[in-house]
Image (cartoon, rainbow, N blue to C red; front, side):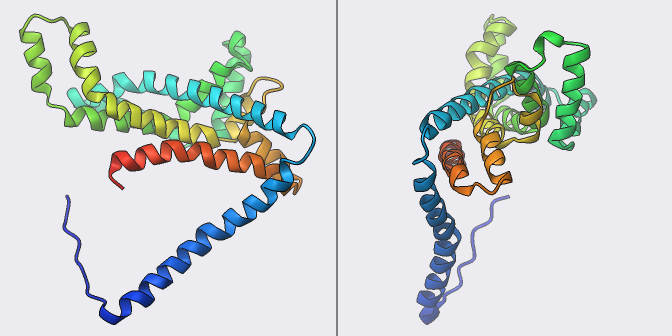
Length: 253
């Protein structure tokens, strides 16, 4: 429930309080940003570094978009069922999505390695098996976004459309989907953001020879090559800022 904020008059202490908060923000953001900028200048000066960075960025975008797409496709029916037909089945399906989310990424990665080798070998070391790992890990994020958006849209609109002779598929396409589209977009942005930085499942399931920003960052930092890791860290921050900004604007932050 929304509650109005309680304002406390600081009077003469407002300027010292504002200066203290500004100092905390400057230290929390300025020191990492300055360190990253200094090492970034060193990292991009290596021969061939720009090609490696561009390749890793393209791979990260491809696998993250694939993971977000598959996650939203799987989350849409569960989220709509939770919002439109609450009951034991919807509750069970909603709770089941959190089981895999509670497991570490390395457990999901090893499980899908076994699945790919023994059951679905054509998918082994493919982008879609990695996307399935992302969907398994981050499905609750998408389900929550879809269910929240569907719960805010009035079911009466769908009932009126059905009463006017439209079939279920057309009602879903012309009424339900447009109403839940903002929630779907927010869920996709959140899943994309988490896929970008997921490391254990990516290390285990990525196709041979494919490096992402997260794996390259881990590779260089594990050998204390911080200047070489800085460009990948900066790109992760930059790419993650786009969905973060979208979610902040949508949430009114």
